[in-house]
Picture 1 (tube, helix red, strand yellow):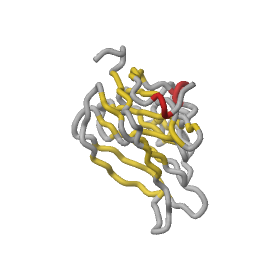
Picture 2 (tube, helix red, strand yellow):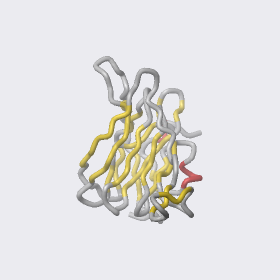
Picture 3 (spheres, rainbow, N blue to C red):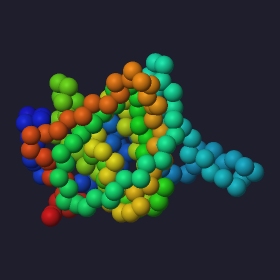
Picture 4 (cartoon, rainbow, N blue to C red):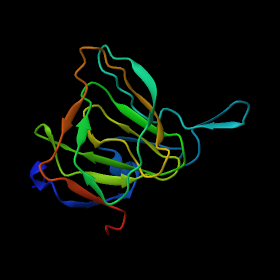
Length: 175
């Protein structure tokens, strides 16, 4: 049985792939041929790649985040979720970043899954999905973020700190 009591487990990251990530949201990437050719035939469009959800009364906002790069193995001691809206992260460089998600098990995160993006991949976390904080693996750690712009009364952030951190290993599972 998985759950918060498994904190401290070692979890190998794997390459980000849309099918494996599907329970948590969408991978944002230009994979396969474009859905449409636009702008006089000079531009391919991969259309409507993420189910953005800002909840009742919410509104979308576009922000830019700069996060400190981290290294693997990583001690994962904080997960968060946003119950009122989805959150899309689109890197503004070609560097990979770490994506960690976990199923909800009774209001707390279950055993996390870890992914490393390929160049050109972003992610959209569905509303209420437990995920690690933004974790670039290289500087400058610059991302465009599309999410719910919180009002003063919004309770759109829940945090969870395991008693014992999980250890996220690089792909291949070695220190």
